[in-house]
Length: 381
Ligand code: SF4
Image 1 (cartoon, rainbow, N blue to C red):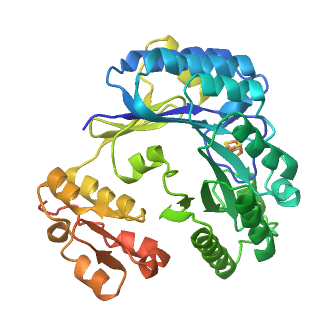
Image 2 (cartoon, helix red, strand yellow):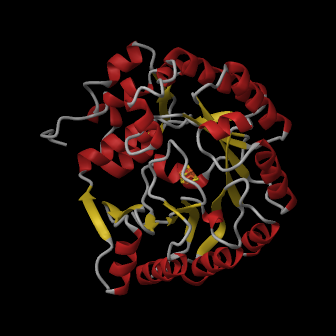
């Protein structure tokens, strides 16, 4: 398998959100230009000669960069990463940081998809999670993206936020529908370690969101989607037909991809790896020609088969049975003989001639189903 996609990490933000555990740094006084130099060198050394089918520039927030730096970032890609015809090229953008200059530069460089970090259309809720933008910025961002010619874009929406009511979430979905948004990535808030929210949670200042209300919000999301032509092609992602994220499907189809930048993760030649995360260490390692990889794991055949199932089952279309057989030389039913019959009996899995996927009931109990696809490590496969 050859990697035909790339993820590029821009680890800068103009503010630090209270819930975020990504590898990111407040941009003020950071060595951004040196970082871009190092990033260019890392990408150059990968010597990518086969055109890629997708690139995703995320973060952090790429739009935390100023216009000149955004152009530099795009030039790096242009210089060192050949793209196939029709390749998907996505950049994450944040409301409040978008300018027409940045968007035009992206269009001219071949970016054809945006992922807009809306999160909510309620200023009150945005403030409560430490976002740096308000309702107007969120709406403006979508309008500017369209004005710049991006008809393919996604918005992130969060649910389960402190103080968020069903009515709030419904209003957010109403707004998305009113704006004719073609793709929504919807995530419930998780209280992750090393975040402001985690501190507040430990101090008893932040209560976990009620699970049943969170489940109701997810149901509402699916209901809205089905009424407005957005189908849940993955557990957390809804799209109008033709607007699914090709790049994210690379992850769920268990395919390989390059990861470039500080703290970026990649999967190349059967090895999953993570780059050095601290900014100055990453830059120094590039300058001194040292390895950038902090951790790497060769994925065993058993792990690949497990991942194929629990990543693939996240997608509405599920796992392609013949591709599984082609990759591993066995039917998925033979490999997971101990788990599969029960999952069918309980109505959590269904299959067609070519695919196996979760039923609606299976999607509700997703994690329970995924666990069943963990094999014993001393298995003979
Ligand atoms: S959520 Fe996005 S914008 Fe907020 S701190 Fe994390 S990476 Fe930065």
